[in-house]
Length: 338
Image (tube, rainbow, N blue to C red):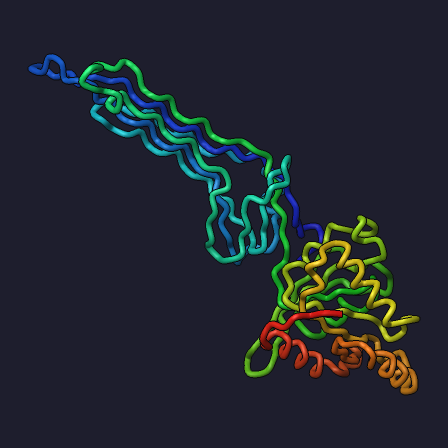
């Protein structure tokens, strides 16, 4: 997906339709002097509805559509005829989209399944016609209910990518290279920080025609949870991943310090992220010698997290990494603690 086309945040103004007014009408026929009230009810105003669509990956189609308005309901008519309902407006969004009220920050909806529909703003109810207000003491009511007003609000739509595995690491740790060799994804790769400016998704083939989805998240830096670097803009995508795969290069000065720094940033952003399953991949193994490899193995032996040594360039250890990921994906839930 092109960086210019990946839109994961939009703010739109939504207005549901007002309900139609009830009718004030009396039955009039040639041989019926006083037919009595027969005003019909007004129709319901149109809803604003969110619908999940697996064919969408970004919110690009909503970037330039700032105002979304549903139709009002029609007024009731004589003969107890109810007015037509206003046409609903359906906003199709990718799975993983959350809708929040822009002013209160209240979460209004969350879309996680294909064709799932949730009413974002309900249309106003139609007013009752004067037929509802007749009684033994009031046989000719000259009034009816007006339609209920529609609702209007600024809505924030945020996309949190749904993936089985999320790659977590500092810039230039080798995440994009790993995704490119394990899947058919073609992320931009270069030897400088922040090459990846948007999340990339790739489907990784496994044995017996099985597969899982891997997401390359833009690199984290110290202070990301406070908004530094790319900050909070992409940390939310990690929330939807089943497994967090930490990528730390073998050339790092201290692998454990780097790993715990990443953990700290995730904890600062959302402590619940630490309850997710975790794997550690020591990347760029081709850049160090055998003695350094043994030293790193000894260093990591004190950690409870499972570690896999890989080289995306030489494709060493990738089968072992896939096995470890699949085992985590299919094993029963267990409590994770440090």
